[in-house]
Length: 397
Ligand SMILES: Nc1ncnc2c1ncn2[C@@H]1O[C@H](COP(=O)(O)OP(=O)(O)O)[C@@H](O)[C@H]1O
Ligand SMILES: [Mg+2]
Image 1 (cartoon, rainbow, N blue to C red):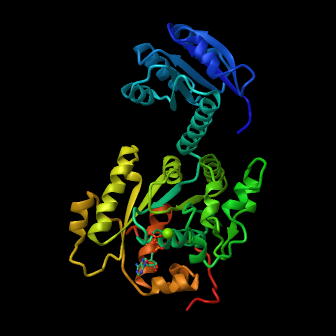
Image 2: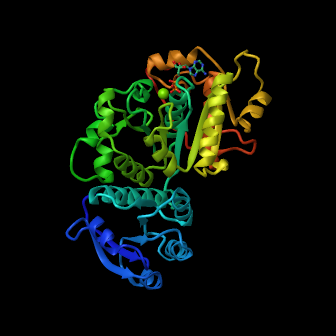
Image 3: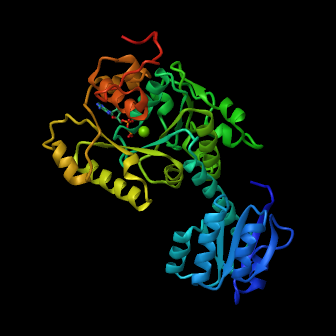
C-alpha cells in the first residue's frame, strides 16, 4: 500500500500534540485532512470530513474517547480507527478495541512503525468489511489443529465437489511451507502464490486469476510455494487482498491450512464466513479440536458458522460420538470413515469424490459439500446436485 492516507486526526484535550505531530510527520504518507483539537470538535468533524480514516490521540480511556469511537463506528462504518496514546494500560487497549477501534499505538513510536500499524488497521478493517458484505461469496477455512487430521483431504474434495456441482469454486493453500493441496489434486505447481507475491506491481482480479491453476473439475487453486523458504515472501496484507478479490470473483472460497494458528491462519479466519474444523477420533486430536474451538470462541467466531468434521470416525478406538460431544462440546455434522481409498486417491492425485465415487468416504465428503450448497439439499437434507457436471476422468474406476 503506497497511497496517501487522508486522516481525520482528533486530539483530546490534554494530549501531547507535539508527540502526535512527531509520529505523523508532515510530508509522510499520513496526510492529516484536519487536526481537530477537542473531542466535541472531533464528533462534529466525523460528520463533515471526507477522510479515509480517523486517528484519535488521547490521554487515556476517558468516557469521551469511547463515545467518540462509538459515534464514528456508527456514522462512518467504513472508517478504520487508530488510537494513539502515551498512556495505554492493557485495560485501556481492551476498552477502545471493544468500542470499535482497529488498533492502538503506544506513544512515543517511530513514524514508520506507526504507519505500519495504520496500514494494518486499514487492511484489517477492509477485510472485516468484506466479510460483512452480503454480496461476498462464502469463504470456508478448513482448520484442524493437528497435522494429519485430514484437512487437505477435506479441502481438496470439497473444492472439486463444489466445482462438479457447477459452482465457481476456488481453493487457497495456506500451508505456506508444506502445502500439498496441489499434489492431492494432481496439479503441477506451474504458478504458485510465491510467483504472485514476487510479481511486483498492484493486484486486481484479472491478475490474480492468471496465478490460479485450473483443475479438470473446473476448480481453481492458488498453490502454496514449492519451497518452505519462499513462504516468507507472502505477507498478511497480500493474503487479505487475495481473499477479498477471490470472494468477489468466485462463488465459494475454500482455504486449506497448516496445523497451527499462524498469523496467516488467524487473518484468514478473521475474514472468513465459515470454519470447517477437522478432527480425528483419538483423544489427543479431540483435545486439540477442543482447543481450536475455544480459540474460535475467543475470536468471537459465530458457532453457527462452524462445522465439525470427524475423520476416521469408524476407528475402533473405544471412543463414541457421545464421547466426542462430551470432550468438544459439539456434535459432529459429518463423520468420515477410515478407508484405504483415501491414501490411494492421494497417491493418484485424484480426489476421492471423483476417483472413488462409491466409497463411503466420498459419500461423507459429499455430505459436507451439501452443507455449503444448502439450496441443492433435498427434503431429507441429503446432498443432491441438479447442476452437477458430468465427468469423464481418465483415471477414475
Ligand atoms: N479417512 C481417512 N482414511 C484413511 N486415511 C486417511 C483418512 N483421512 C486422512 N487420511 C490419511 O492421513 C494423511 C493425512 O491427511 P491430510 O488430509 O494430508 O491431513 P492434514 O492436511 O490435516 O495434515 C494422508 O496420508 C491421508 O491419506
Ligand atoms: Mg494438509
